[in-house]
Image (cartoon, rainbow, N blue to C red):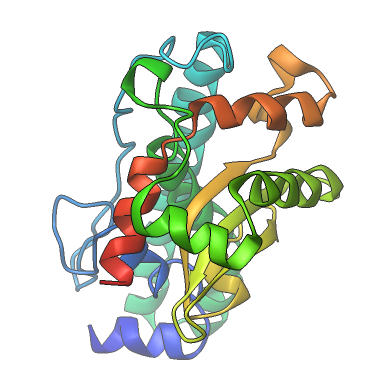
Length: 245
């Protein structure tokens, strides 16, 4: 763990092993979770199962998209993340600091892709399982307080996401230090924590084209309009109440 802490302190693994893991209800050292204890032995990561069938989110996201998104894209991040970690493990064993530094980009990108997608799948639910139901409870009240209304929040997120150049994510997060809700965007596969160490993701929407292009082509606003019909606010509220008891 001392080695891992040193790597984090040097910003070699900035967005993968720090506060973001807390938002998933896991931590370094929890074998069987998304992340495991980094020690002299190499641990790898696996693709998490979806909590629903690939076709469960239709007609808003097609089963074909979900199949490709999960088994091809997310699996690709996991595979390349494991590869980069193996290379990191070898570089550390050899004391090759230059090789360690060169792996920063691959670990950030693929580790971030693994983290972000693991959150994204939980942020979705079929209509039959409560997907699309407006947020209730503590989070619903907080949204009204910070944004004026649920509709205003949806409009703000859609505007930010539609304006995001290239690929990335739009987030509803909790700033634990300021005790307020925030909307942020991140480029590529950067997790929300890259915008601030006290930010906890409650909701993340993937606006990479692979998340919608087969169905919506280049009409990102249409995808953003429909995804609210399958958002799992129960999960977001659970995270919010864990972080704001």
